[in-house]
View 1 (cartoon, rainbow, N blue to C red):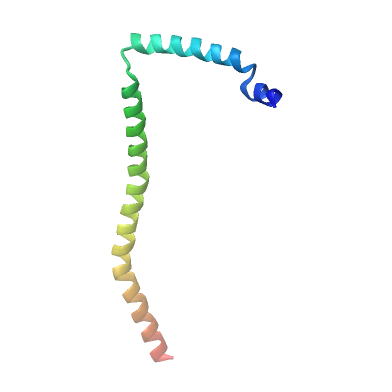
View 2 (cartoon, rainbow, N blue to C red):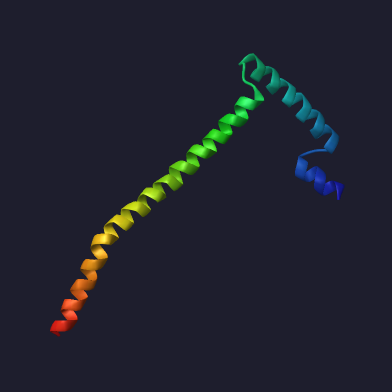
Length: 89
């Protein structure tokens, strides 16, 4: 079991934890120097997901509106042409 955990983590759990602590500390110092706060990163990620969601599904909503608008004209014309064709032949 511990062999699979070490294989998954890329080393012993203690050495991986120490590396993660050191890297997290260095990244934290860098982000602090750049005046970036964790809340700003989370808000930015949430805003990105929200923007992507509205871009994709907003476009689908507009496509649905265009479909309904076209169907109001096309479907009655289709049925009229079918009725006229069946009455003639």
